[in-house]
Length: 101
Image 1 (cartoon, rainbow, N blue to C red):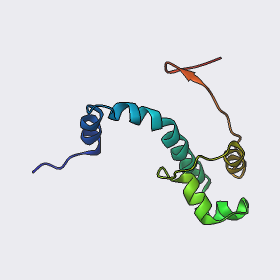
Image 2: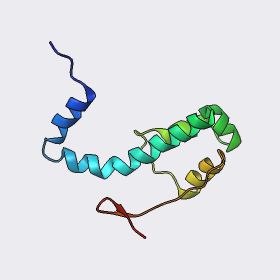
Image 3: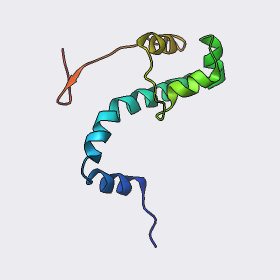
Image 4: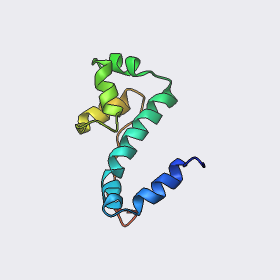
């Protein structure tokens, strides 16, 4: 029996009615959280270290980075998180795959 790859599973799932729309609706949330994790890891910080810098609990950082979190982060939280690693938050609006001027 051949093992299913993530890519083939995703391709099959996106063929099902409604799945593609849900996937697209959640893509921005997943992307933000993926970027948060990548930013932290590139800076060489653990969740505990970021929590200490931001004067919060590790569980709050874990929730912030979790794709399964039911809460959306505030812009000020995202900005503080970025600043803790020497970055600033930039938000862009996109239409049809292009960045608006």
